[in-house]
Image (cartoon, rainbow, N blue to C red):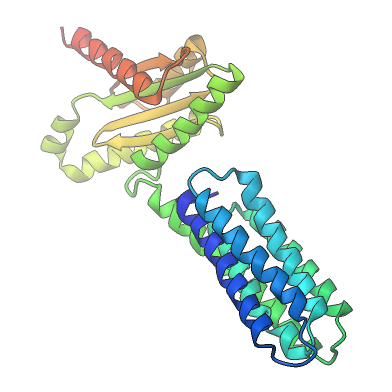
Length: 308
């Protein structure tokens, strides 16, 4: 899931809870004699019970449970459409479908979100076609179109917001927050798989002199040029981030010390700017903070040796 996981699962619990309450209202005060009162009562219990379970597990619910919960909502929408007693009851499922679509667009990766929306539309449409009421084709097409448009809009807006929140505005590389989150995930994978992983800290030499002598615009241009030149030498799995000021960081999955030395040589050849680097390759039990600390110590040993 994207974003704050606890918030996402909490909203999913809220969606189940509101749906359960609406089903309870429909069971207690049926809109017509043909309303599926027994089914609404069962769905009220299921919705409220699932809401409580999701809320209690909101901090540690695994991804597969989130996907199962969303798929279950889609299937329940299909059942409600199938058992609706009137065209209004079928089309009235639209707001719930929009809520599911917007949720997936905000919290899930694009491909997964679209798969869930597709399941929702198919399940709801199958249920609507099998329902006793007829003469709702036109509003139903409008409902499906609305769900698709709003889901896709939310997906794109959320992607833009995440990109803006995780990108350094000057250089276009990952900012500190995004870099640390992604590097921590890569390190966890490396620890589980046994693959090597190296972290590098890169710090520009005499950057203050550039700012003082040529102006801050020259310093900004140097940062942009270096980030662009380095980016052209990196693999898709490598992550370059700006850690602050004139300091950059690299996360290099699947890369040991020797491979890192080869990469550093390519980075030096990519741009004439002067910079120092410290590296640290992950070992058993290392945290990201451990790697950054070791890389930082090595960086400043190099700076002191070059100054001497």
